[in-house]
Image (cartoon, rainbow, N blue to C red; front, side, top):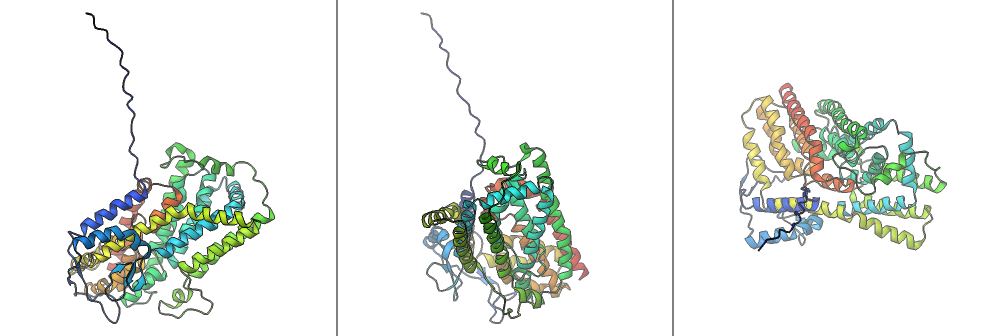
Length: 507
């Protein structure tokens, strides 16, 4: 009996390329890893000085966290909740939703991002943003590099003077379409903002939230070491600008070399820079004026002018606003209504646009909350002081140059654990600053090393709302951003280590 062979169709072997997980997945994995590490890392704490409110050098001691396995499970379970509105107990330092003390969660930043989303969506609904971007793109169609330089310098000035960080989240809705219109990609937009402001913060000169808090905790003036920090600013900002320009020119010359690739809607944004754009109407000009005024006024209200000029302990000027996220969120909400009225929106369209804008930015807000929840887990597990104690032991009995380099390197892991520059300063400076006296090094160099380490880590740490929130707004995956920025990180690590070592030796 003859056997008839039937042709069997070859299996369809589809090549499944690995897709890097979303920011939500990355933060979930990190949350679980940090939670597991809390079982291994020894727990302990420093005694707190009644005078300074900071830890007392040499007072580190083992302390049982007092958390049962069930308590730890609840910590993991509640981490997103604590990340939003967890309250830090004034008595115990424990963070939870039912404690009494200071808000530790990111509720303020969360609502700030939602308010910005409403404002931007409202402004774009009038057509003013699109048409305005088209005009800028047409004007700078052959001078895109000049625009990148200008924006990065402006962001860096904000970073070095007032620690511009979360505030940059409001600019992505403007910068991303602009860069796409000029023939660049979303990474150029993200890099322009993140690296521009980030290096400014890294080389803070009078930033009261980093330099000011650290100098005060170290017992020195905010002006101590300002010349050396300004030198770092003059050297490192051009390095960051060069790095972004290098990639931007490569992408514009050959879009196939983009690390992000095109996304839905990118082509439509890019065409805004082609041809002569339509003339701006009177309403659109008025809306653009409101947008420009709102962002300029925002920057003016958050700069602590008296503290920058006269030192961190100075009383605020009578005309100084001292606004923070609650006031800024209210500002953007009010100006959203102003834009809607100028644009001639009726009641229904105005309210529908408001809800749509909030919905478009809710994902970014949740990412910020998850990032803050990781910090809460570390705080409640009592492992942050353990890391700080290991640093105290490592820098003892070293030469001035080695001490400076170690100060920078040892602040790197602490910057990851405490992404807040002011929180990092308040925690580390009371311990690390006195060690400079034994090494014969100026305490100003300890401040410089700390803020440099904090600045480098906060360019990439996934526990930072600025990084993860910004990338979410730019629609750039975290792995794409890491592949983009790692060469710059190496440059900054070497440069900051050298600056810290040489500065300590010279001091």
